[in-house]
Image (cartoon, rainbow, N blue to C red; front, top):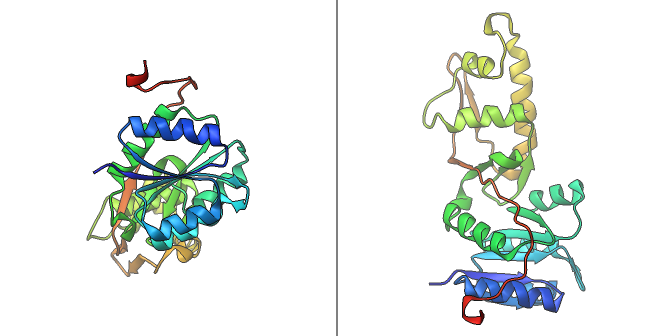
Length: 242
């Protein structure tokens, strides 16, 4: 069955170009020009992935992310925009975007990303916590995301690599690059306290401590890392049209 792609773009020429290419690449594409139309389409049928322009005639494409999290939690969400401000990207990630692509985007790259993300983030995977290593982001079971520091991501990666067993304080301290014998463990407690507060909006606290044993991540946690290549924009045609 062809993956169902929701394409939300108000530029009719660009929308047609992207939709045609994705159909040639064996995707089923539903096209919409605004937030209201797309919201109705999401509730009518859950898409496997969504490509959403940020600036739309009837509002921001970011407004669709909460609807997708609620109605289609398995959906892979890509934001498309000519704006490249970091704050806008961070807002998109925190609201549930899986990627933020700056236009112009080569349709070949879109197809490759869709295939990769759909394969790596199957239905039901949003029940887990996901470390997005490339963007230093943690995504919670509720679909929300939080950008973390490299130190915080390092701690989570250690916990993720040790399922069903505790990671000792000493292991955490030494992995962070400190000498355990001269390290004040209260610093580690402070780091973990800040980490818990930062990820609290994403779901129930999964980081538990046990005196004399260390720390454990009590829920399912997965790693996601996707290095994307930047392709030079080109004009294309379906093979049948050449």
